[in-house]
Length: 491
Image 1 (spheres, rainbow, N blue to C red):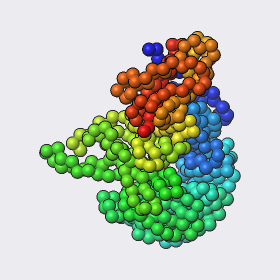
Image 2: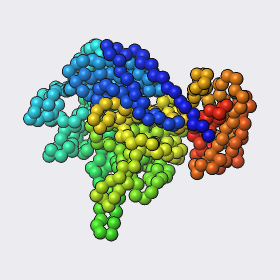
Image 3: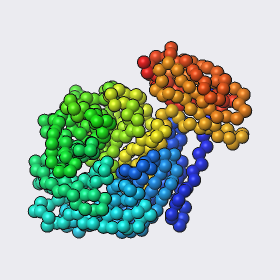
Image 4: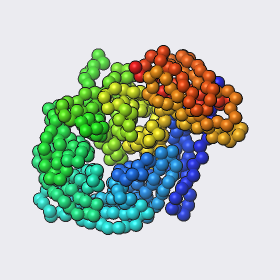
């Protein structure tokens, strides 16, 4: 069977540099592609609260603080080098078509703590609109070291300052500051006895979530419900070590949790850490693991998320459809607690009821900064190279929805739906003057389970009622050109 040849042409739209930037294709198959952006390093995602959110906004953490917007097809929509000395400037949010950043004092070579905190606003071309101080060193008697932030649905921003005790990166106090998009401080609150703040995330119009832990002490894992306006704690759930929290609906929150397991190789006993993916029911106040996610491969396989890395954005869970939620892991095989064999990476897709849709082991070895689900059902993962530079990985579970006829240079658009499917699928394609077309379905062992001719361009209905529930791949062959994808059959 001939392999389809997918030709992709990238147009650099709205590039504001005086010299061209390149997106170089490093790897591509029918389900994924990996590109390298050849300018800048240490990129971090800018959380986008505007309506143009079907793509990803990023900014460098180097002295240039450049802004980069990539669309869902990995085309550069916008790139601007702001050329400002911004090592103490961290771009965090995009709202109202403006970029909101925090600026703190630079490290002076002896000790570092937050002597001040500014909210800085630029337009998307990098022009400064305002800078507003929201915290001074003498506002209280506590020395603040750490800084976390979230943006609420109404565009107010919550900043969390952490103190440090005993020089061990733990904190027993935190300060919450609520600020509007004009830089006005609306509320200010100090909480005590919050050890090792793990994460906080928007939840609803009234509350946001804040989790804390004391690692390896299960009874200290607490998720708080904090009032958006007063910043007072109103409720809590005791249970899991929660980070990368993501609201799925009014009562379900997905999150990662690091767990540990005692192992014995016959010579010594040791502990290995690995990552679970959980759902938390905020009304019933309990958490449960995603079905079969603990270990879909082998007992010695472990997942890892760099939850503590400065380079990693906190978001490792995203979705546009609550029936298709993405998460992304590095996969290791543990060897007697001494060394690890890195097996690559995995894309995990599940629904808000906790059922696993599929697990896809990517053919490339990448470490995630963050991830962004897109409206075409795909996933974008930006990450840093080992020597700098930005890499962009796009995963499409159903395959890319177009092929290029090399002879005629005509683009052929193909749709297979619904997906997941139960009793039937529809196959539509747009190909001029085709002579013969058919679809082949294969199970995950590579066995051909169905083959059907396609007689028309629109409305081909294929009966799949005889197929067992599970994952299948398909090939659509149009005049000898093959196009592949993945589909899910449900009961």
